[in-house]
Length: 147
Image (cartoon, rainbow, N blue to C red; front, side, top):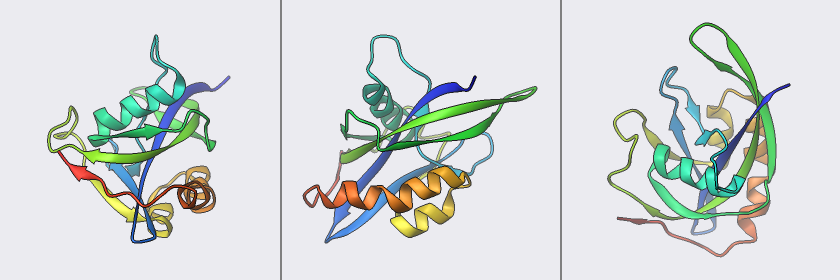
């Protein structure tokens, strides 16, 4: 049975263009979305928003319902673990200059199509490409503010 993780798909809309925030993984340095394990006392979307703060240094509103999910093999020290990830769209309202994992990761905004090309997991790429534009088009134009 796969392990469960929760992820945020941070996005912003600037002048009608949707951009997705990706971060590098700590071990392999590939582009990913902020994700992590369930947190005691937090709903899944709250855990996803917390991961976005810790890994990407952003704050915002994560939708309470997932926009989809994907599976991947998490590389552990001695083996691999199959994980199922529920993904929550998160409208970014602030980018922090200082955040917990800033020395361990890079973050970068990508247009939707480019973000889908940058990630390795096919299920995540499809989610970014096919589902995020619909979610984002329903929202008003936002501009994240550096804090």
